[in-house]
Image: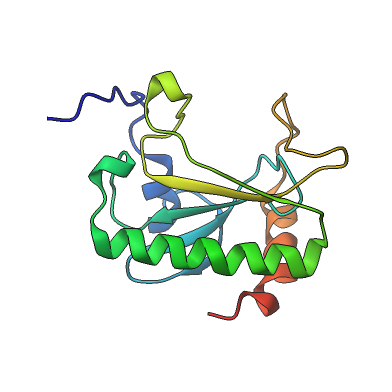
Length: 145
């Protein structure tokens, strides 16, 4: 039995993005994992690496999904490093309401650091799909998948 309380946010936005039901920039997709360009950029090239199967938390993913996700986290971190040339890369992941998880679908955030270090935790401007597509186009040549 899992004790984590996940947010009540259904239908799942990430499942809708992957299915094409809602527009979103999918930078890369494989059988078990995908990379999305978030519209809320909290650092240069803020990306989300998610499972393609709906799994609410880290406790719900299997070993194959874990391996696929972490491989993509490493790949996108390298791409962000090459394109953004930031002095740091932030990687974070939240599970459950108490951990501030907003979408109940396992995902890992990967972003270049902002000037002064860290990432932006205050309110950020929501980018258009055209703007997130431009980020994807800058990163795609460096992704090496």
